[in-house]
Image (cartoon, helix red, strand yellow):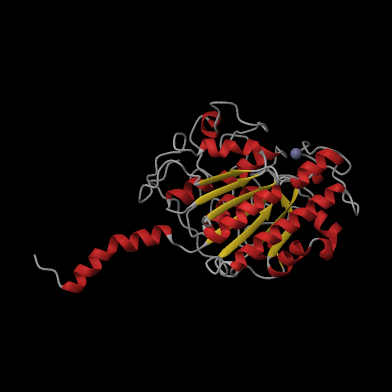
Length: 360
Ligand SMILES: [Zn+2]
């Protein structure tokens, strides 16, 4: 059979076009969790001591009234909620309640008694690159759970392998950690990046959650401000990132005023967290509850159950929000923002249905 030349050329290009489509969306998400960060710390610091947070408020959409998980206000259960977009407990929860380094042989799926997909898995299976920069050693849980042994086979399009986390960096000194991230943002940025900054939590445990001027806790939040400022600079210095990158910032929990802990999940100080979104098409200076009024409701002083028809904005929204910004379907089996209906852009794109072939 004889094909006309232009058709032959087009056919020859198809695999290339498909590969480009899968791997080069050009969009990036940098998702930051500031461990133990209370939203009112930004107000207490003011624009001079927290210029980056005030810049994010001015240029992006934000709220000081987002929520943690309902039952747990500690680090690993909430970060697992962020990456899986599930609550902690119940049949649909991710089930990880421990808050210490995983023991040998432990991983998310074994603990859940079933595979748990995540933002790393969906992004990677769709041909994107993924990275996690963590400042506590317990985050090895995610590196282990999505390595080339425990990650599920990739059944979505091209086979990108079982290891869903291309780059895992653990460095407890957050300045050094951000040095590494900034270097990678200049040379080889991943498409989906998660950054964990432990400073507020460490200061809170050592010296208490104290938002009076000059407190060690406020100084730690000011340090986070400076580090996030360096990330924004790095985005704007790289022409491939500038205008193509969203920054999302939230926290795993707050902390009880005057206390050195944050475990009581019925305490407002513990379950109230910040949520900032900045990037292309994110309306400037807007209340995130106003931007997403179609699907989210400011919860006042409560932390309502997951069954609430119009839920608050939660840290658990983040996995699926990141995927929706990257133009990808929600995490299979997820329950928070599973419809990708948290609106953060002026032009909210219709959600992409989950791939039925993707591993549950
Ligand atoms: Zn803590």
